Each structure stands twice: as C-alpha cells, then as structure tokens.
Length: 377
Image 1: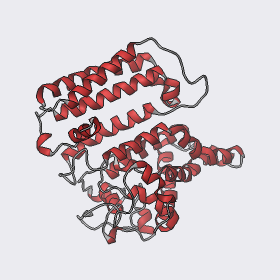
Image 2: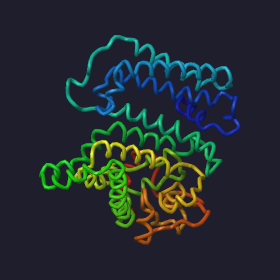
Image 3: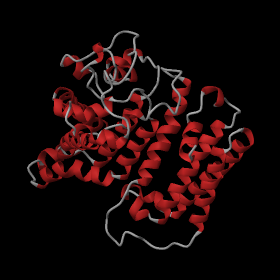
Image 4: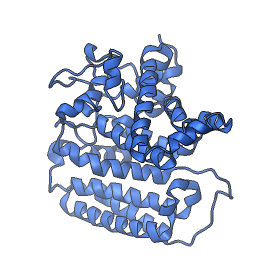
C-alpha cells in the first residue's frame, strides 16, 4: 500500500483505533502541527510571495519565529508520544520527519526574495490561520456537543473540503481583486461622496448591524437566484453536494460562485462608505459565522433561533428531504426568509440527511470545478 493510502487509512482509522491513549490523537495533532511549522518556514523565507499584506505584522521575526519554535516543539513532542503509544508508527514518524525538515530548512541561510519586487502574493498564512483557528475552536465543540455523534473528524470527503480551504486562501489576492473591482469603479466616479461621508460617521456598532442587514438582504436574493436559475444552480450544487455537515463543509464552494457572491455583497458595503474597521470586523464575523452554521453542533438556541441563523436553521437549507428544498436562504437573519416565504424550521427536528437527491455532483475538486460546464445527459 502506498504512503498516501497508508496515511489516509491512519487518519480515517475506525473508532476503536482512535480511542484516548492509543496515540492517534497525539499523532494527528503532531502531524498537523508539523505541517503548520513547515508552512510557517515557507512564509518566513518568502513573506512577500506567500503572505497577505494585511498580515504583514505576523511576518516579522519577532512575532513569527517564537510561534514557529513553539509549534516545532509541540509537534516533536506529539510525534514522540504517538510513536511510544501507537502500534502503527506512520503518523509519529511523518510528524518527526516533517518537523526536522522544517527546522533544518528554517536554519538555512536566506536565499532572497523570489518575487522580484512585484506585488503578486499567495495567502499561505491566511490558510494556516483559517484552519488552525477553525479547527481549534470548532473540533472540540463538535466532539462535546455533536449533532451526529457517529460522524468522525475525518469524515468522508474531508480532504476535498480542506483543499477548497487551501485554494480560496492561496488565491485570496485574485478573489479580493475581483470582489472589489465593481465597487472600486463605482467609488471612483465620486457619485456617492456625500452618502459615504454620512455612513462613515455612524457609530461603529450601528455600522456593523447595518452591514450585516444590508449584505444579508443582497445575499438572500443572490443565494435564491443560485437555487432557482438552472445555470447558476450547477455552480451552487457543488456547495450542496456535501453529504456531511461540519466546520469545514462551508469551504466547499465553486470558485466562480465565490467571486459572484462576494462581489454582489461587497459592492454595496464598500460603495456606501462604511469605515475600514467596521468592514474588517464584519469580515471576521462572516468567517466565524459561516463556520458556525455549518458545524456539526446539536445546539438548540431557543428564542435566539427566531432572530439569528443557527446551525439547525442552516442544516435545513442543506437537507436532503423534499421539505428542505429551496428554504432558509438567509445567512444572518431569518427575518428575510419569513418575509419572502422561504422560512422552514420544524420544531425540535433536524434533517435526516444532507446533499442532493441522487448525488449528481462528482467527487474531487477538479471534477467539481468542471461540473457546471458539462452538459447534462
């Protein structure tokens, strides 16, 4: 069996081989930390190419090197622990090997900046922050409060969804440019200067609420169009093809849909002149909130479910049952679904399954990328 297949078998080991004390938890954690350390070395050596300018403060040696050092120590410890406890030594061995490679490469003299001074960059640091932040926050919550207790961390198709995270993070510059291009052109006309000045002067909290309400209204109709227009649905079907719901399932989205959806929702927010601090705060809320509503959490939030989108609300949007088709389009506020007749929230019930009837969307990132452009037989 190849290394790749062996590694997959270890990561997706059955429940009885993943119990506490088996070395599996230490092995998986160490493997993830080792890869994180290797990526951090990439960023340290080529910050202009592999890091987002907005995260440039993290690229300084005074901040990133201590993080890298601590990550390597933790990875090495976990790898050693896994080797000691686990019968199969693959995870522990890979963890230690990758950690040693990262440490040796990090200690080598700097060769220079390969970017040649141009401003192209890839968001490797953004990917690491997304995965580490999302995983550390939501994986324990999903283990403690699972909606589906039998669903493992490495459920089916987890690798595809992680790759979606990777692609959208690495191409963050392309996504940002295409998202902001319409609003940049509109702002340049100067037609909205008075309105922008008034909106920018609103209290910070009011701006956050206004951005959420405005973007949710726009996204409701864009989202609904992706369900109702056959050509658009083929793109959105990729997102709905996930057969399991968890913190990483929301990353599965066709690249072109990301561009359309973000441009449609970002344009009014930027054109109206909300302050940069309000927009940055909203973006953080969106990232966390999107992860939260897709998560494998069994929380019933009572009265809050009347006013805010919750996991149960959004899980019904992804439900496989007939009653779950074309419902619950809102991202933040269920009010829009109530107003426009698409609200569906059966009391104390969850969908029995997720995905699309017949599961027509193929598996694998590149097959799914090409799916909307193929003729339906």
